[in-house]
Length: 217
Image (cartoon, rainbow, N blue to C red; front, side):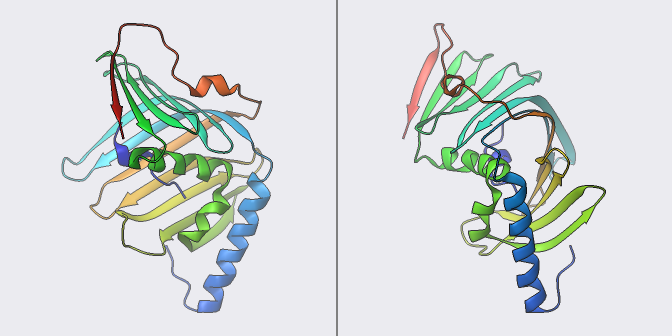
């Protein structure tokens, strides 16, 4: 899986500064209302990655589990490359590739761990992202709210903008599309949400076998 594909996940420009500030406040309040009660979430997902240079889109599928304050597990189960899993228990990120029989461990301060944690922040507590992103557009229709965010600072990021679609009736993010400065984009579509409590043990790699294990700082 592309490292950028699990980066942060959260048009028409408002012409008046006051309107922009008002839109940001409304979006923050709306997201706070939607996500304040979500502590655990399990979903099925489809990931579509468009590469501008090749002019092609790669599609992968699987299931994911998220739990506050930032734990996650991604299981890519439908891909010609074989089973691929990402685990994060708040202390260590683990990446497992079945085809290569390879396990990579990263500490919590590694850049990859920080990037992958952002998607969980979006799904469980997106209001935390407003310190780094501003609302470019926000609209509601057909029991859905769609928000376009862009970085407050272009320094240190290759993200141009992020579109987020929230399903109001079940209160969860159902679609996220990240647009990069180089013309590439990645889209995550989520379905079948379940909000039942998740045992923290599932966020720790526990497979048995004779793996090649690598540790990264």
